[in-house]
Each structure stands twice: as structure tokens, then as C-alpha cells.
Length: 204
Image (cartoon, rainbow, N blue to C red; front, top):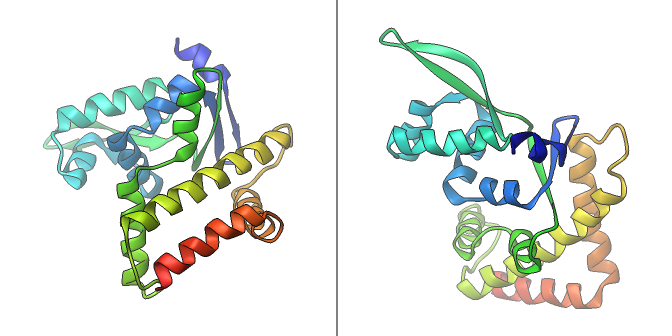
């Protein structure tokens, strides 16, 4: 099973493209997303992750086991705590680009929608603390999720068109996503309308 899943993944300059919808579902579970976010900064042991997330180590181990089998993480070393060896885990890529293939249409749409409303609310709260926006509301979070979902779908299509390129670095991916946002805002009237609605909600 693991070998089949790995066939639908490609790694290019720190970016791992994952196409298997079942593997994608494993990676976007809430606790596993938090684990992957932590591992983006540092390689960690199960106990370190458990302490940071305030979870039971056995729970984290079960998540790590699924992430390892699905190709998201791998044991990159070992350390001893009180003479007891413990594996250190690292991500298999800096960025996981999710391009779901097959499966049910509703499942693919759910994946492309991205994170929950609660996570978008959390993002808006952080922007408010930074002084970048004035207002935070559930309505704004819903609009933000709608915009993100549309952008993610576009970005996935664009990346699919250049998937055979030998060198696609992190900067290229970020640049494509940023430029796509600017072009879409300029050319797509409906998208521009959604953005203006969001601005009116968060700027007051």
C-alpha cells in the first residue's frame, strides 16, 4: 500500500507533490497538520511534540506512525533521554503541494477549501493584533476561506502545467502564487468583487 501511494508523489527541490487523495486526507487531519507545522521548524521526538501540543505521547505516536507510513515524515536520528533511545522525526519535504486526483468530487472540493473557519478566524485575529486589519468576524472568515479555496484551485492547476519542469524551487512556488493573486484580482471581476467585500468587512 505504501509503495502505491509513493508512486503518486514527486519531490522537487524541497517540494513534495502529493496526488493520492487518501494520503492527502491523512495529512490534513487537524493534529497531524499541527505536527507537520512543528516539524517545519525543527526535527523533534514524539515526546517533544507531545509536550508542545499538550497531548499524550501515545496519541502523538499513533499520528506519527500514520504520517510516516504515508510518506510525510521519516526517522532522521535518535537521542537518549534517561538512557532510553527515542527517534527524532523530520518532514520528507519543506512544502507539501496537494493536487488531489481521483476519489469523490466532494472530497476533492473539501481538500481544496483548505482549513476550517476556526483557523481562518485565528488568522484574522493575528492580523488584527499586528494592526493590519480592524475587524474580525465569522462572516469575514467565511469569505476568506472562499477566496483561499479559489486561489488554491487555481494554483494547483498552474503547478500541474509545469509539473515536468526539473527545477521548481520554493521561491518559484511562492512567486507563482503571489503573481496569480495579483493577475486574478486585475482580470477577474467576480474575484475582485469578493476581495473588495472582504476588505470592507475587515477594514470597517
